[in-house]
Length: 589
Image 1 (cartoon, rainbow, N blue to C red):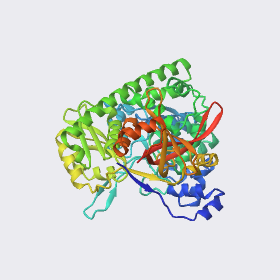
Image 2 (cartoon, one colour):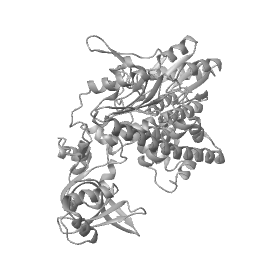
Image 3 (cartoon, rainbow, N blue to C red):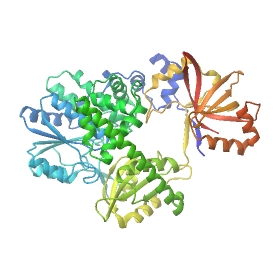
Image 4 (tube, one colour):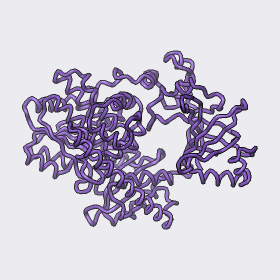
């Protein structure tokens, strides 16, 4: 069972309301999102392009642009090395289109998930040399590719690293961290400890976008043109699950405008084949429909398909690529569900559910879905989760880690570096490989060093405030739209109310898997509540608390004893031209 908490961030609501010309209600919402600075609050509710930070503040960015500009002017061969996920695809598209616009001779390469693994490697570097490449630019990878970057330099090539991942470090005998960067000609990553860029949470495509902005300026191209790339950058930002605050919020808001009026043939084709045509594309549809379809090519096939989809000007080819991606994503869903079932069986049979950190080796999981499985298992058990599976090397296993807010998985796995062959990531997600013989030692060590308390391992529900249902108005719902788009770092507002009588309940939907509740407000009026969770579990809980007879009465609309506390978001229901207020119930007790 979850613990419910009421957010109560202190701040001068009157001053915020006056300075930003907003209600105190909205001021409270901004404080609850951790925004304490008026400038950031203004950027949040008015996320306009003029509020983007100066890209020249990023360490090595001007150096990287200078190298790139000279390569373009000298007609040198440039190769982009990306990654196989959505952010990697978005980064490649951003750089490719930007460099092409500047007249550069550029192509790209994407590591194969199974045969290459993550990021640039020595094979890719050697091949680039054989192909006569003069300059390699990495995107969404490279900051931990020490050997590959060193080889590029030894072979006489220039290499510019653009990345957003955590910087590798070692810890000396005094516990001090010593950070280590690859020996590239320029290493551009806002997470560098010596980088003074004011926003550290850009995705890989965001960093690539900053590079192109300055390149355009240096090549005499209006920087306004760079904004055309935001539809790609927005996709990478949402799908890489970075915090939707500060610049990321501006990128996504502006990118969504462009996506919803896109002329990109590939994107239009993908929107159509995934059933989204005619609907407004938002962060949810980007993150759970479009993004997974694009990612599917890198998971189960070759990630080049997704890039080519968004580069092609051939409408027929665009639909061919889109259909292929959609089909691959359906296969990916099947593999994911199969993998989750196997892992749950292991956890339940082997007593792992008592572990604070779940480390599960399952040879039958396709390595391309290990990260998705880890995320789903983490949500089910509310435990940091590492899913390991077989690799092409019979002595080695590889996998993905996903974490909870209370546990920095990058930091904790870093303490076990001696057991690992490769490792990279950030506080909430990581990728790793190790010898099969080290699995049990990794499990023991991570659990032994974990300082997670029992309370840490209970899911938390954070409510913005207690809001009586009778206080919901159309104006309030409209005002909340200023907080969109929602995502990581900017959750959908969640309100709470206690002791609400349930006048009647209906099962609705094709599979009778949605619950519509008629809730009685304190002013004796009613409002509809929709619950999309487990209806059978809801009935079981109600029967356990109040008895089956009261549940039957609830469904018949007869006076009953059932009352609920709910965590909800208010919304507007539009049907046949009529509008009414309703609440979407996310949790109950």
